[in-house]
Amino acid sequence: MPSSRPWPRVPPLFSSARRPPKSSRNSMRLSAYFMPTLKENPAEAQIVSHRLMLRSGMIRQQAAGIYAWLPLGYRVLRKIEQIVREEQDAAGAQEILMPTVQPAELWQRSGRYDDYGKEMLRFKDRHEREMLFGPTAEEMVTDICREIRSYRDLPKILYNIQWKFRDEVRPRFGVMRGREFLMKDAYSFDLDKDGARRSYEAMFRAYMRTYARLGMTAIPVKADTGPIGGDMSHEFHILAETGESAIFFDQELEEKSRAGELTVDSMNQYYAAAEEKHDADKCPVPAERLRTMRGIEVGHIFYFGTKYSEPMGAVVQGPNGETIAAEMGSYGIGVSRLVGAIIEASHDERGIIWPEAVAPFKLGLINLKSGDAACDSACEDIYRTLSEQGVEVLYDDRNERAGVKFADMDLIGLPWQLVIGPKGLAAGVVELKNRKSGEKQEVSLEAALARLTA
RNA sequence: CGGGGUGUAGCUCAGCCUGGUAGAGCGCCAGCUUUGGGAGCUGGAUGCCGGAGGUUCGAAUCCUCUCGCCCCGACCA
Image (cartoon, rainbow, N blue to C red):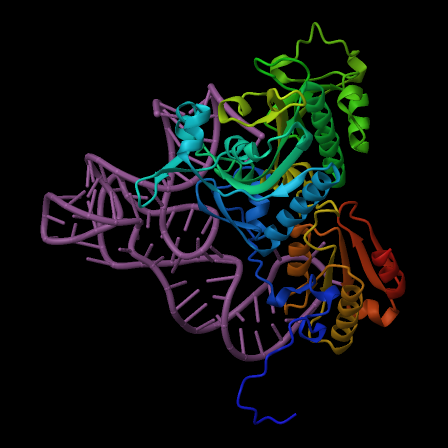
């Protein structure tokens, strides 16, 4: 190839040679990774998830209730987001992306502009037009769905994974009660109440599957339905000792929840109530089956009829030419809150214990003696081999002492640790440690790799 | 929004009461010794002591105002 060509060579758009191999894209060397861990607890963080997120270098606070997500935290956030997305898609919902900034006019039309109070962050653009940072999106999605004109185009469920802002008086608990937060919000549009119920049911089931896939047990609890009534509003709580609210439920419900197979109807057979609705004297569950635990609310779904479709004009024409306002429901999951909630539910005194589905990496590869030829080459081999097979590896190749590496690895909570040291290598073994159980086994390298790629 | 607390090095904190121009541990940089669970020694860098005003010859320290952050309560995915 002559090097004297007068124009720069244009790289081929889709040449696979220019891309890193697909399989290794998601592994990292710790020496190159931006993961600023802290040995001590920052004074501002009081609860365990907030402390661990700061200490493990997942987030940094920029203002009260506003956080920057660093590489490790962002990986987890994206994994949760993706599971939520896949289950929404599987339930027949369609993803859209609505803006974070909304015109005040939309909210004036629904009448909520005045009701919302100081929690809504308001400002003016350069043309003095009143704007706001969206705390939720019922108005906007309803406005968008005015495009639907015929009953034949219903039902529809649209969802959106986007940053929201609520100017809480008192943000706290790190990302669990931030002012800015990532939320999945879905909205269903149906022709009648039966249809709305079917949509509600579909979302309910998607939620149960979502939490199960995240590795969490979430208890659905009937929530206040306001003026509409019925059994069409539920909150979903992840069980954690530090939960904000006490919940009371039949232990059989917990077993069903764990499997992710509950429906609205099957859930109606069981008792579950939040603190404010529970009356010990009237509780139908025998004491030996009643569980009392604390929960973190990580989802809330409700049906609200034509509350927005009527004032905002989201109406369709029915088969007989009549005008029908859409029956609507909305369905929220706090994606960023889930990051904190999962940590609250899954940690020990050493650090985080990630469920495999949301772990930032599957494996932490610890080179006990960086610079040792045998250790280095064994680790490089393992790193390459596993990465090529799609295992996400965080390789601690730093020139640090063993204790530092163990401590950091326990702190960030990857499900597996593979420890490579000179003594083990000489004996033909490596150590595979399970973060959750703490179990360590000395096995051959082949056995370890087989276990990790299973 | 009421009540309380707190701002000093990247992190945790001492110094403030009783003014005299800033410290420790950890972290960071260099070197040596180490190396299987947060190492040792030596040397080094790092601070508008949250901000503004005041008192004083002199303010991290005393006074006033202000801002940030945290906790408790009322409110929320």
